[in-house]
Image (cartoon, rainbow, N blue to C red):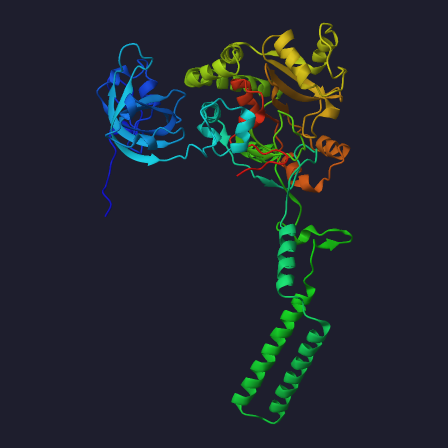
Length: 566
């Protein structure tokens, strides 16, 4: 029987650390490096304490003519490494020093000699585990690596300082997202990844189908076991006829029960064989067709299905029943783009607020973005300092600006006039009323004209989705975009059109089929409610926070045209 183990209180809950207390990692009986070097005293107060530490060797070097080695170990809990000193008498040093080696060691924390940059180091008394590395083949050398190079080793890149820092910032933003909405009375709803409706109406969706797989399966089966010939089927029919005649003759002759049962069994087998042959003769290679079109009734869902581009439409069903809700999950777009701002798979945060108008929506979006920025300043400052040092000197200042500044609010018409009056810059895209503002326009508004976040509202109806509420002028819709420095549009949202006749007209104007949206129209037919919502592109928020330029470097496993590694 396994030993019953109850961890000490220090392992079961977070406690305020005193100068000499140690916070153990739950469930693995080790101490995180951040709980040593991340202390206000840099770990000095823990000198003399015995701890177990696990991590990966960033750099290792033998010293004293091979009598001991220094290892810089990182476990991913923080940007800083812990210096580990191992004597040759404790473990073979050659197994420990290669970059990438995983070690689990036990030892005593010591204050290093005066003049060294470390506040504390670990003197190892026992090496518990080693995950060895062949330094000749290890694809992540100690030299500085480009982010482009790391995309080719996506399974190993979390071990680098940059990607691990991005992962911690991303985690902090996800935690902050749930914290903000939960504290403000929102219910978390998981919306489907597979859908039959196109939220944006752009048609750039990945199709979900088993028809190709089924066709390939039939093709393989027919190669292994070809379909029966006409002669084989005719012979099987004759056999059934003969066996049927024999049964009839035996009944007429009043044969014994044993003879009749045997003959009936032979007839049954003959019929089953004929049925199998006829079924196999119907097998056809290729996609099933009907009236010259693909027959989706033969598909897995008996209709066309796609990977979702947004959970908004589905989460509205819960907003119209449970009030404030939000969804946070992956979305997909089959846009064949190779720009630094596009992914085929990305994450969206999409709240929906019942009984809320556009102003309520803007208030929520502003509060949410400010909350995210302040959360990083309060909880992820060491990683943000890493970003400032290595990627964007203004990253922390940008977070402070956005978290503390009231957002400017201007109409789309006002924004166009401001941009048309710009003389000191030549835009690549001409500015005129009715265009969808480009990233260069958005960034100019927030970075140059206002020098703070901007919310642009009341966009032209023709460039926005069918579900946005049509304003009284019949030319604009109650839509809004939150623009921030570095990335431009961070959030897009709107008050939803709750009037049944108006939204039906909008669907028809955009030449979309009504049938896939009948369930969505029910929300307007039965107990309609005024409601608003928005979507925040999660990777764009990480880009904004970190200052990294390419969206492929702020998502764990980037998917884009030609690449779907792992």
